[in-house]
Image 1: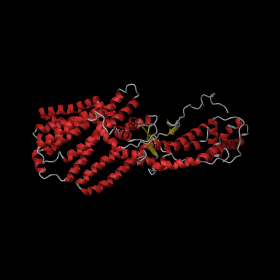
Image 2: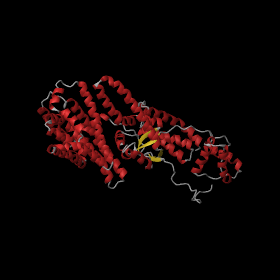
Image 3: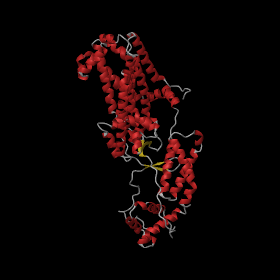
Image 4: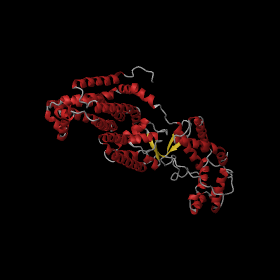
Length: 241
Length: 326
């Protein structure tokens, strides 16, 4: 296959341009995390804010019937809800407050391990500074300029808000007689061909042909037959099912 | 090995592991079923590495990665014994941290108690100064609260216990809120902590000086001395924790600023946990002891002085020798 090195303009960037964050585990494997940006986090916070308001509203109405005792309990409650709501949910619910749960987010430590009491306490106490001078101004700026979208509290606590992994549906690889190419494929070429076969259902027929036609010459087939040829190679790579 | 063969051979393992992880995530896993968990996890990691190395398709590698990540989350979850840890924290770790960070504690104490005492003296000597610091309404409010005649009238009957409850809740909310703000403000290069320490010292000092000057000293001092031991120390310590954060940003030493901040935050949060405990004690004393009128003022001074001595002795001496609970 032609190498891209000759075309500096089109050369593949060495580091991928996406926002993935790799952690290496003690077992020697790399796990990719996907940090979440400002918008989903703001929405999650908005939801949490609304929920807290709702909880407090309902409880305050109930406590109003208890007189002074109710006021006392109410202030303790207000304290718990305003300072501890996030900490308790994050530590006891696998890093998800209800808002994060809905937006599909979770908080983890920088090294991918679950968040503990002290880190959660730091990031939520320092939320006060993130909110300065109004409406999460500092937090938003810090979040927008940081490569992993951390607000100040996250930097201090060494935590990261990531997307929770969603289960993937396994696509169907198109039927084709298995083929073996006369030359060896590199690993990323192998994966590219597999990816092409697996993602065909999402592409229009024209685009599929257009993509496959690029490889018609190295595969030594006519552009019209390139798709079938590639599917065959993918089948061959997968092996008999 | 071809991808399909690899997959069919190991699929049952992966499925079994996934079920176990799901159980763990929901907190329903039984201990005896988990003896093989680390082993299964390592096997999964091995399969993942193999799949990546052999260039199998992303639709095989990605689910394995997700599963490994979920397993990683469960395997490395911290499960500490909260009870024993709290005890050793209170008996030893907290005062040790305070002593270890004595420079910050000293600066915070100077800022807070210095401004408090300084302004109290100034207001006592120049009474009109109070109106430059505290608004006239607040002054009248404070005077109403500590008026010896009014309080004798108002508190002739013991306060109802429900009112104690109310005040307890209020103090918890209000004071811990202030302490948290003082701490968090440290992130602004320490300026926030300095501001809150100074500001709170100024307010408390001005009111103390004013009330003493107009002759309400007895009611005021006998009320505040008891819980003040815990409350004022706690505010100063919260400020010290905040200053620690700020200093990590100003002078990170050999580390990058972010890293220095992270390390400082981990230490200072210990101090904050102690501050929370102190403030809970303070709120309790303030609501149930400071407000009683059954005890003569000299009794309150005595108890108050003992509490101050206890707090100072605790911070200076507790945890110097190693004890069994650690």
